[in-house]
Amino acid sequence: MMTIATTALIFILISIYFSGDELAKSHQGDLNVVLYFFSLSLTATILLGVLAIQHGAIDGAGQFHGRSGQVLDFLLQSFLDLKTDIRLALALVGLVVLPQLLCYLLSGIFFGCATSVLFVGNSFSFLIWFVVKSFAVASGVGVSFALVAALNHWPGATWDIAIVLIDLSLAMLFLALVFLGFYRGAIPLVAKIRRRCPRALVRGLSRIHRIFTRRLPQREAPVIMRSAVGS
Image (cartoon, rainbow, N blue to C red; front, top):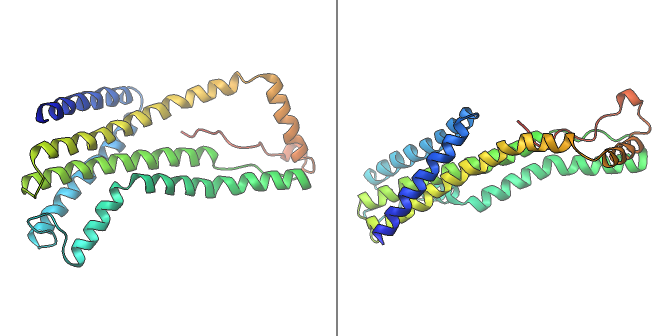
């Protein structure tokens, strides 16, 4: 098991390098942000773990004790709960965009004075970065937790298990980089698709929009929505 886990670790590290190198070609700032979140969560978790052990919030078996232990347990589970993070991000984006879409439809269909749907690109960018951040932070927390557990010889925390946990945690960092790379690559692709959109479709959408803004002066009629992909 140790050999397989170690081989997987090497493969994941190589994958992280190549995905990071691809981002570094034109999006160095993005790469630095992701690595900062990973480094911050890694360092903070190790320091908090050491302090918690010294002050008895975590015992020699890795169990949490007292109010401080409960807080640490809650934080640990929160940072590793990626499903809840993604749901939260989707809910926040939906809360910003969906009411505007509904308002556009209602105002346009019945009254002809629809207003633009704002912050679509910004909301999409927020969603991507929220997910990337969650994966990077969970990765750092997972790696540090595995190291603290193995170094303190907690029950069941052998180095075989620790390396497997590190593999899974670093895989989340790799996914964060890949996800961000796909997003950055999609921005020029979406712009290209918009430029090559069939004229019949553009005319149809423009006709609908003119109907939805029929009571607005032509020079004041807003566009339907901002770009679907933010910077």
